[in-house]
Amino acid sequence: DGRAEGGSRRPVRGPADGLAEGGLRPGRLVIASILERGYASGAFRRKAEAIDIHLMISSFCFFRMSNRYSFGAIFGVDLLDADRREHYRQMAGDMGVSYLTAPPDPA
Image (cartoon, helix red, strand yellow):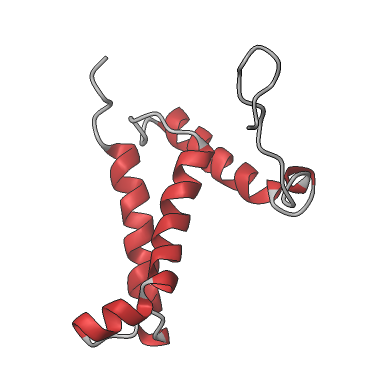
């Protein structure tokens, strides 16, 4: 059932294991670098890790792909239309910046 000795869950391993040492790690480092600079300058106030920001951006992008036909039927738009790409890119960036520049969560 995926449990190690003592009943705790073992980490799930799959085909993506080891990618952090290869091609995907630079993206994480870029985001981490942006976060460090934002915190150092005082521009970012709410704490987040690179994975949080990557998840936010990836979720927005994946949603557009996986729901393009539903949204096309409901709203009459193609979410992958090249003419709308910059609009969605700006939205994704604005979401991240809005989150990071908001007042920190109360303790």
